[in-house]
Amino acid sequence: MQKLRPYVLCIGGFDPSGGAGVLADIKTLEQVKVMGLSVLTCNTLQTDKEFVTLDWFQTDDIVRAIRKLMKTYPVDYVKIGVVRNPAMLGQIVKEVLSIRSSCKIIWDTVFGSSSGFDFFEFKNMELLQNVFPKLFLITPNSMEYNLLRQYNLLHDRLYVLKKAGHNPEEIGADVLFTAGEEIEVHNEQVKLPPKHGSGCVLATAITAYLALGNDLETACNLGKDYILKLLKSNETLLGYHNE
Image 1: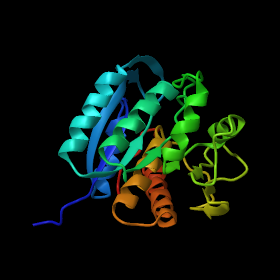
Image 2 (image 1 turned 45 degrees about the vertical axis):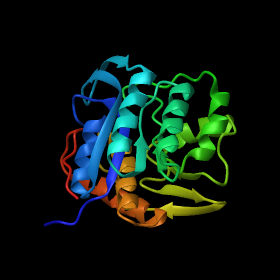
Image 3 (image 1 turned 180 degrees about the vertical axis):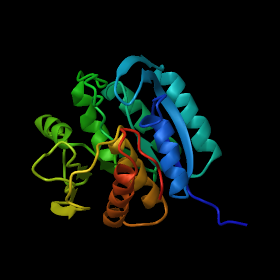
Image 4 (image 1 turned 60 degrees about the vertical axis):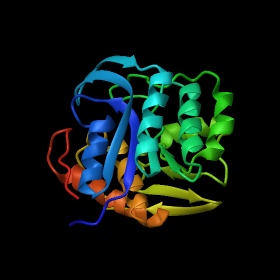
């Protein structure tokens, strides 16, 4: 019999194309040999090229699902994707930590889709002052990172992986901020075909490698390796998963 796999809970949206959201999360976790669980925050109609509609679930329903799964399975790592606003994020984080206070939470700060649709509502941002100290890692792109800095939300106790996907001057060079230290996380410095949902997949891969017992820097490098294979897999916007 195989060794039992660690559990990771992914909380995010449903993308019917499978390129992003919880479908992409589960594909990634299975490839990395981690048992994946998921809770939906919203339902979307989209393809790899077009965003059509979005319908949010009620926060109470999201919290109820989190509670059931986390009281059933030994979840030590939670990855959060798209959420509606600071209040929803705060309720999710509160519920997770009320069930398992040692749980490490990774938030992929998805503020909008690559096709230009805005997900996140920037109201009551002061609520995040109490939420961010409870997070383990966030994975913003350059634009999201700069927005969070404007709200004075970044601090030394929070690990931050700034993704270079939106920085044309540093192809593939992500930066991991850890307690005042900056660590460059590289893969091949070449332009590769873009992929729908690659940022989502990177955050999930890192979470999976953390759940397998790797330290954060190693998990980030392994996550970048996973994304490199996804980007190289074909010429379309929907990549093939292969660990």
